[in-house]
Image (cartoon, rainbow, N blue to C red; front, side, top):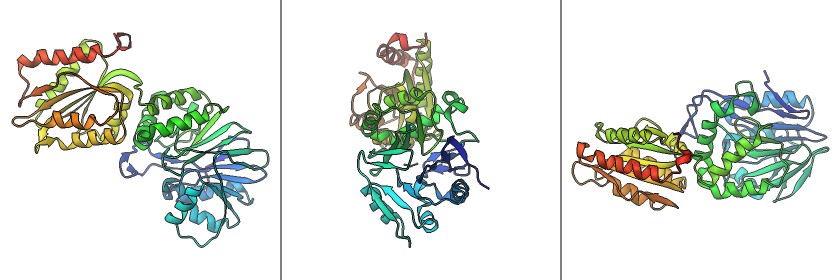
Length: 405
Ligand code: FEO
């Protein structure tokens, strides 16, 4: 049975929700599910914006069939070819052989790479700024390469001032009956997952996301329809301002993310004491054991907070494995504009601190504290002064007004 959501008088959500998926893209946990959004515009011509993942394909076709109510499907606008949005294309072409696919030339290439299909649809290849009139609505296409794949484009409906934003402004989490962000407590219940979604999926491509934001900023956008998560019709600055920060690698808040790797608890002890000393100074802290918390969640926290401390034991003459994975992930996602402190542990031939620093030195605008804290097996009372010095140095490098006391 269909499950359709009305967005405007002539725009419908015809996507689906998946709450059984354990790991999105095989990497990111989605304990609250994920939505795959497809939108149908019922104008003089009918226009479908993207399809869905194969997990919700049957529901999508039920929604689409019901929404069309016997009408032909005239256009499929493909904004993104990643299979979580394109898997239903071959079946769609079989069902609607008269359809015209509206896409850019990169997308046309990807379709052939991904799919073998018997139908031979018409293609309308569009470029930056091209428009399509569906009757009452005029749709303008804008390229958004690498937000998140090279073929990505977004669409602006200048009639109703709606931005169909592809992966941008998306969020993990199933919709749970709602469709608009203002129907839920987004800041409390979904912002963390919006951050986790952006930073992990698109975070590497901050420059490209900034270009998209610049392209969109002159437009009168009153609604944003992303491919995952909720539609924004109110409080658009709430999400736009977050994207401005995330894509420019600007911290949202002053505070310290402390990530530690500790085999027997001695490195953890150093991290704990540092966190306590920071709190004594009124500095906000979050802590993660990298062997317990997935790197993707710590990466998201690293995008949120201004300062990072890594505390790692030395392991096989290198960085502890799960810490190494985290550092690799941070570098791969272009983390920058952060102040970093390092705690190194090694009973003999310690290397982890130097190696962490060397990897992070490849990132832009990372300021390292002058002194690294060296633990030899376990922290000694005589080293508390060094912890205090590290806490002081972290504290001194953030504006007092932004601390909580
Ligand atoms: Fe949900 Fe880049 O696709």
